[in-house]
Length: 364
Image (cartoon, rainbow, N blue to C red; front, side, top):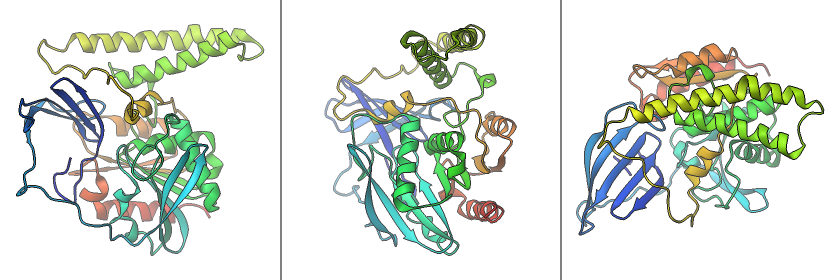
């Protein structure tokens, strides 16, 4: 979906069940019903994904006509393009805007591509050599059937750093790319000079068990961690002394999942009758529902021992910036008022100022 050519809203998942349709994008989701003639969709827009931050707003979509249809302008951003093989069946699009100085690698949000930064990246090239990566499953990159877990996506980025011979770059991630930043920063902190989260330091990037409040995302992460440790116990791949693993399951994992599920159940029970229902699972997975695969691959990141800049928009009642600032001592948190989720569009000057200040303070 597009509001205008400067503010695209990429749709990364579409699910249908008869006339019912749901679009999921970075800012939120749209649920509606297609008219009998296929000329319109009447439904509601729910801002905030994965957690709603507003009440549903009525919104009717009309099929474009010859008079109302339009197209995006051609790509005129000054970059070169190459493709890097990162896995047996995955080759990723890599943009190079050139520039002098330290390497900076840009990672887009869910549903977007490296071209999300086409207007922003050239404003960095006076100080840095700037690259962008389109993750697997999107844009001109390969769309393999598997490989969408957070750590696998992080490994894709590391493979490109190796191919390009980039030593200790600064990784900049928007939105869901925060999971790739946290994956690399927690597992291989020596590989990067710093991480910059642009509206990206949410639960998929930093797990705080104290923030469980019926959030299905946190519940999913807890369940995945429990399942992983139970697999260790079943398969015999657990530590030599299984007592520590069993103790951890009894003292931590099982109580945490129980708490999370109770909160999730309470939230579901509070939904009034007639409220928009969650979309049913897609009948087909051809092509695979990449966004769902990525969400299913979220991991629990709690320690990210590298220099971090985290830029958040100010949202009343949303405390994630405080949670991240308290839980990640290496992070410098900046809060921007009157910003949108796409902060490089709504607050470009602020983002450039903070990015330059952060990078100039990093050790060589």
